[in-house]
Length: 413
Ligand SMILES: [Zn+2]
Image (cartoon, rainbow, N blue to C red; front, side):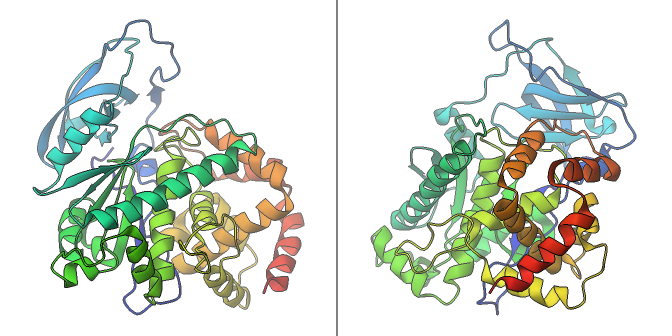
């Protein structure tokens, strides 16, 4: 096992792009490698608690620093490595040699921090000067203007409502989300300084990211206006922020990024999927793109789920001119195409296209597939064979799907 699972979902920024969101950086589950070749003992996640708040305690080395954790053990590998969730909802993966101690308390009842405690832990993690703007479902820590934080909060709340309605209407059982954390930096420089710890140099290429480790979404003031005006209160209302954002040529990418990362966060906090479960990347990313598609004709920049994504469609159409015969299979059975910068763009385009196609033509099967993924436990890896089997058992054989899929793509305008 390795420590420091760098699993975050992040969007590549492009300084010269005005054409919509770029693909994510490494989104694949690195833990697959680090947890491979050991037999897992999945903890008693589903046990009914009998004792309130008897926690597990772990001491680990995390990036060279000693961490004393209180929470629950999600996975204890035979070699001594662990995956541990602390009460602030961070998930820590540690190799055996980084596990200094683990004290388990049997059927420990896990009670995560409440909103007040999460807020305190959050502020302790951030540089000085952050303030909190609370909405119904979000804790927004910001050092931007209040208006910008309000604008972000309104966008997140619209997504939260739309996301919940969308899946509940499709019979997927979700649970109430815990308070969701969003961090908004006032400028790119401080965002990069903060994001570097998790993303390394890749932070230079992103404008926002969701971290599976911290469970937070992080971005910065994408208008740049507050910064340019010395954080003045010139854009004093969310409405003016919105006008400024949507007038910007980068608006589409900006809104899409915020929605995309927030969608990842919702998926992992609504009971739809477990963090660090082996969810195929084509599905994770295809779905986030399915939700992100901005609607700049609307006054608020985003309102529609499942609209055609012209940027991804264009990329997909170009890809079909030289698309290998096994393309669908390679997309489904492993995540390699998403990791390689040379193939990532077409992988994201095909992932969106496949989600769009399946939602249009096989909606019931898609919902069934979502219920299957909902049951995937933390840190248990599926074989490529199993992935393909599950896909084909739900949607039909790839040989049968391929011509219908290609027909739809060529007909879309
Ligand atoms: Zn993503």
